[in-house]
Amino acid sequence: MFPSGEGKSKEGTFGNELTNFTKMIKDHNNKIISLLQLFDRLPENERIIVDVLRQIINENLPEYCKEKLAFGVPFFYGQRGICIIWPASIPRGGFKEGVLLGFWQGNKLKDEDGYLTHGTNKKVFYKIYRNAEEIDEAAIVKLLKEAAQVDGLNPV
Image (cartoon, rainbow, N blue to C red; front, side, top):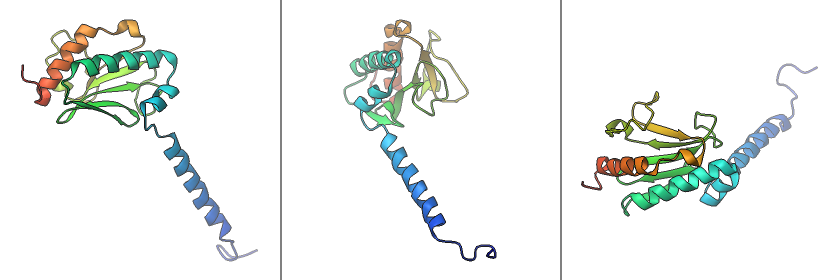
């Protein structure tokens, strides 16, 4: 009835803007901003693995290293990133099952025991745990000490 664009109500445009705004608010509300929110979203198996890994890391990194949430997952850093714990149920991890412990400077670690997987990322080397029984605390502690040394914070 009307030539292209003529006589159209502005409600269609406004409706699209409102939909986009609603999506943005929903995304913001889904953002994980605390460990409690993270643990609430995890299946029990992942929650246990994350808890055990966090405990090992917090007990073995130098006290001047910090933990924060980055991308909604625990991230540990000193002068730069040291390691990250990424549960599979949190989007953008790139794997379907378990919990990934990744070392940001993994390419600089000796990893004499060959504990870490060298995937497609040139720097980040990792291990994926499907259950808490797979966690080798001694191997992780050894890697954490080496990673802290690489970070330049913990002289050997």
